[in-house]
Length: 359
Image (cartoon, rainbow, N blue to C red):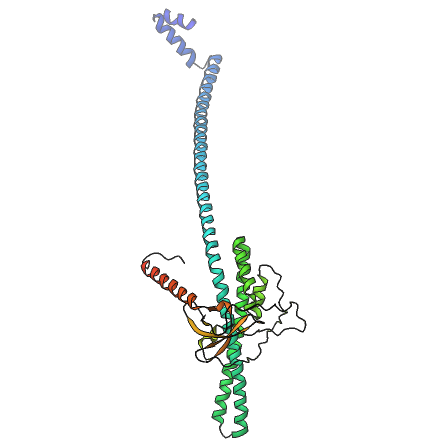
C-alpha cells in the first residue's frame, strides 16, 4: 500500500500504481518474505510439474501392463486351444493307427509263423543233405586213395573241394538258423511289450500250435511265446547237433518244404511224454498237393501215415519220398480253390494298379 500511495502521489493512476507496487514487491530483493514465498511457489510449481509427468508415465505404464496381460491371456488361451485340438487329433490318429496295426499284425502273424516253419524246415533239410553229401564224398575219397593212391592228385583235390563246399554249406545254414532265431526272439519280445493283448494272444496261439513243427533254437523261441506255456520241450544244448539224414538225397523241389527230423539230440530223460498218435486225416493212395510257398504247389501221393510224428509219407513224381506234416498238404479241391483266390487277387491288383498301396 505504501508503494502504491507513492506511485499515486507521483501522478500514476490507481490501477497502474497497484500493478507497479505488486511488481516491485515480487521482483525486488529487499523484501525477504516476498522472495522466500516466490521461491517456495516456484519450487512447488516445479514439483507439481514433475509429479504430473511421473503420474502420466505411471498411468501409461499401468495401462500398458494391463494391455500386455490381456494380450498374454489371449495368446495363452489360443495356444492352449490349439494344443488341446492337436492332442485330440493325435489321440484319434494314434487310436486309428493302433487299431489298423493290430488288425494287420493279427492277419500277418499266422503267415509269418508258417513261413518260419517252412524256412526252418528248408534249412534243416539243407544241413541233412549237405551232411550226407559230405559222408558220400569222404567214402569216395577213401576209395580213391585206396585205388589210385597219389596217382591222380587233381581228382583227389576236386573231391576235397566238394567236401569243403558241403561242410561250408552246413556251417552257413546253422549260422543262419541261429541268427534267425535270435532276431525273431528279439522282435517278438519287443512286440509283446508294445502290442495289444489281442495281438499277443494271436502270437501265443500260433506258437503253441506250431512249435512241434520247428526244431533247435527256433523251437525254443516258439515254446517261449506259446499260449499255454505248458509244453515242456526237451532240454536243448547250446550247440545243437544235427544228425546225418537217413532218407534219400532229395531231387524234388519239395526239399525246401518238408519238415525234417528233429535237430535236437533228445536227453536221456524226457520231460514231456510222447504224444498219443491220432488217426490220419488222409488215406493211402490219396492224391495231394504240397505247398512250398504262396504260389508253388507240387502233386504227390500218400503212401503211409506216420502216427508218432503226425506226418504223412508221400511220394512225388520224381520218385522222392518225404514225411510231410498235414498243414503243408492240400486236397485237389483245396488246391483249385486256392488257385482261384490267387487269380482273383491278381485281377484285383491289376484293376487297382494305379491306386495307392498301403505298405
